[in-house]
Length: 227
Image 1 (tube, rainbow, N blue to C red):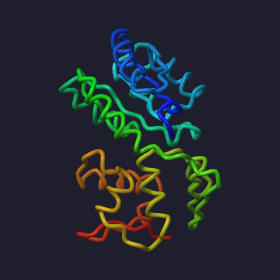
Image 2: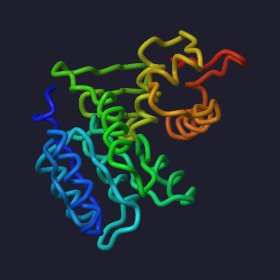
Image 3: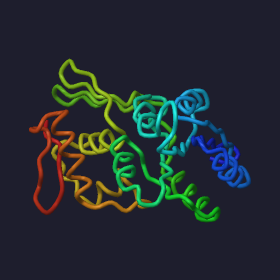
């Protein structure tokens, strides 16, 4: 995809941030859309369907965490990459951001060259949605990759992006043991550093939602999905 076709939504309540960051991204050739709060950002995301959304955490009307959760529940934006802008030392915001479904975070203030480099790395994670419907039926679990939803029995649920990708990966080959490094590479990619504990936390959440008996831990190796 050419730069001129890539849309980046920048959501921040500080006019200076919108102007400076927006200018640097536009200078690189990207289409930049701006919004002054999470509520407006949500509306513009639905309208423009950007490849990347950069969200500030603390904003009026609707903060970045809530906005991210709502964005992740929209099937049309399932492949959109979301990163947060956080001030140095806001460890809680970073954790909350990942829990809300964010892919990464950018610490501000940030130098223009580093910002552009970070944006390029984030955009490498964007995947064009498959036009062919992909539905996995595994016992009482149905995974609809196109609509980004999961049905367990009669209960339909929308999972945070990383949980969905992890479930989708494991369920793609039931019974196969996926090594931790393979899971990290496929779900989190090479552009962000996460620990093995991150996988454990996401597996725990999936067990709570999908069923404890669906996931088996192979000690020292990884995990597998069981029908």
